[in-house]
Each structure stands twice: as C-alpha cells, then as structure tokens.
Length: 350
Image 1 (cartoon, rainbow, N blue to C red):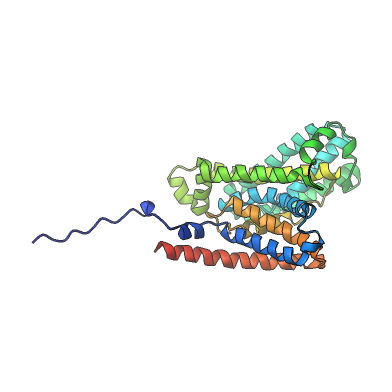
Image 2 (cartoon, rainbow, N blue to C red; image 1 turned 120 degrees about the horizontal axis):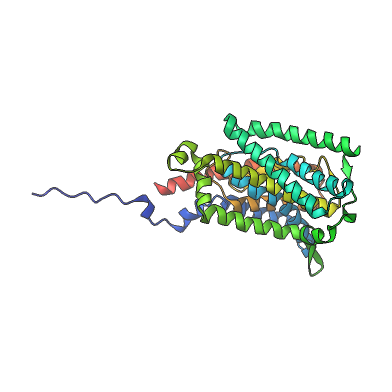
C-alpha cells in the first residue's frame, strides 16, 4: 500500500488575500477614516458658519498643506526607523538666512534661497552623519541640534541685525518671481487656494511613488525594519539614512521659503513646535514609531486632519486653546486604532 502524499505547502507570497485583508494591511486606513469622521463632525457643527464653503476648504487645506510638506519627509524618515526633532529649528535657520542675506546683504532673493537650501541640506547631512557615526538614537542627536541651531539662529541674527524679526523681503531683487512660485493663489469661485497646497500634493505624489515603486523605497522599509538584515542583503544603510535626514531638512527649507515669501520676512522662532506636529501627523497616518511600516499618503491625511481641526474649531466658535487637547486625544486614539488594525490584519493571515 502506498503512503498518502502530503500536498506541498503553498508559498505565502502566492496566497490570494481577500479585499478585507488587503484593506486592513493599509497603514493609512485609520487616517482616511478619521478624516471623514472629523470632517463630518465639523460639517454638522459649523457647516452653516462657513466650514462647508470654498473659503472654508481653502483655509483648512492651506493649514494642512504647510504641515503636510513636513509630514511627507518625516513619514519617510520614520519608516526608515529614525526621528528628526531639528526640523523646526531648520525652518528658522533657512528663513532667517533668506531674509538676512537678501535684506541686509542685498543678495538677489533667488541666490539667498539657494544658499538657504544648501545650508539646510548640510544640516540634514550632519544629523544623519552624527546618528550613523555615534550610534546614538536620532531622538537624542536631533534634540541636541534643535537647541544648537535654534540658539545659533537667534544669536547670529541678533549679532548681525540687532533684531530677531526681519521684514522688507518684498523690496528685494527677484521677489516678484519668488512670490509667483512660493506664495501665489489659485482663485476658484470666491476662494483663494494657496500654492502651498499644490506643493504639498506634488510632494505626496513624489513621496508615495518613491516609497512604493522604487528600489530606494524598498531600502527605506529595509533599514527601518532591521539595519543588520538590510546590510546583509546589500542595502547601503548609511547612505539611505543620511539621505532621509537631508530630505526632512529640504522639506523644512521649502516651508521656510514659503513662509518667508508669504509674510515678506522671517522670525528666529518660526517653526517652533513644528517637529512634534509633523510627527503627530505621521503617527495619525499609520507610521510606526519603531520604523519599518507606514505610508506617505497616511501622513498626508494626518496633516489634513490637523488642518481640519485647527480651522474647524475656529468656524465652530470654540476657544482655540482647546486645539492641543483635541490633537493629543487624536494622537492617542490613532495609536490605539493602528494597533487594533495591525492585530486584525495579523489574524486574517493565519
């Protein structure tokens, strides 16, 4: 009698998963659902006060866009397993570099903007190099550079100009063209949609494509999951990490440029707290604090939630002091929901 044959185990990669399983595996699921819930809440409470108008949409989209520009880069860095707490100070550094060089030293504005970009990239490179060189947590390294660059910005600006707030950018050479690119509006109906919204959407598309459709995106997931395993399969871990820090610095430069051109000046304290808001947006968007898992699109929805809440409170007539309380609860709820979704996804694979 022949022994019964045991069917070969099916490769897990070839298993056809249900739509529900694939949906639960999407890190941005919680943020997308949260966006609809929050928007619906304010539509009910403040719909008759302008929230549902085009002008209302323009305001919360602009607020979400400014945070979203940072959140795209921060989410990539977090997926890569690192934090950057210095991005708020880089906003201050880049903004004051642009304004001081163009207003006090009479550089053409575009040259000052380019110099600010080079300085921001240098700071990002330094952050990444220090993290890889010292092996210290990026939280510690970038917390230190947050204070270093914030203090240096205040000290150098006061030394050169005697002030910490500088205006007059509108009188510099090249301001008109810079305003068209970084601070213009698209008029739709009776509302003006800031160009920063389109910068944000462009970065979301680029970031999502980079993460999901390129080898570099695979490397980001790899270094965030396990640096040792990534090195063993040939991933240039040091290069990837440093480039991610440079990308967050570049995002901070872009936001600083938009703000400097929009307000025709800079403040040494501009960007204070932006690092935490960007991390909150990324976490709400489904990005793990431990790295190796997340989504650029989720971070974009996290930033949109931020904008909806911040402006929705104003439309609803609620004291704006409660905004941080609301965002704190949103962060906590997002982490809990993300944990539940991952557990459900793991159960469906069994």
